Length: 332
Image 1 (tube, rainbow, N blue to C red):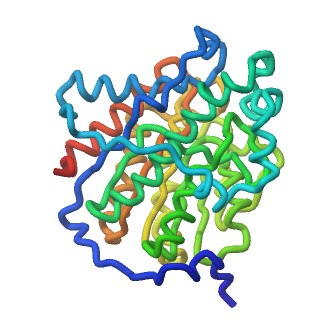
Image 2: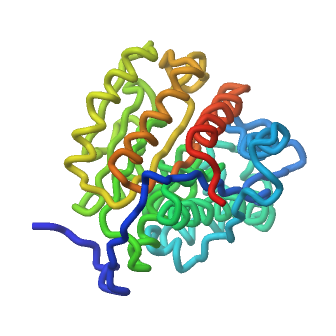
């Protein structure tokens, strides 16, 4: 018996035809993704300002023109409530809760007004970006949000540096607008997408697939529809072989109308928060494998950037995004 979400009782769902043979890439970005806490942001191992560096490099190298990126609005509170409960929203009225979710104790010393403007607002901007990326993917086949991928946030609880689960909110928003019914989350961040798995645990219309380092956060793991735990030291050859093995079966079982792809690059060797051994070349190939599979299956795909904690992790994602643009071309 299918557990179809009640939110689909709103606007009637209309399946769309997609000409994925002519798929192009839409880029979504806003300067609002970045934050400035007077240097305090540099104390955190997650460099939220890497999104701006990727965008700036794409511009500097002529990969993107001045009007080539679509700029999103912040996600509304109404749309946040499609996934998150009053418990979470009320918790965000207190600095110490935000500090706990972001694992940054020094944030607890700052006034909540500062954290709302400098922390929560960038998260809401990036979440709006994932929603927009979903919409654009329906139009042109492929969309990349230069941010997002906050897959650890649960309905009533943040954590793992995440406050709002943009992947889940985007799916619920597209469903509630009648643009989508069945979705597949492909989560290849090195950390399991536990929050996303919890959100969709009882929803047969959303399939969650996670390949992750079994030895790191979160412990214990949640239960995705398919979890592939990876051993310490997993290299390009092993990783890509496993992905190639599992992707066809995932598409067959999920039968999605859209893929939300969490493309964290913390699978790279020497990432300080993980234990895998992929190279930049391997991660670029990984991302291409997922996007190519979506195109071959004629399924729109929205990609988010997720984690990456090595000092030069943004270079890895820049190389991957540039490869996708050079392969498929930019949306007009």
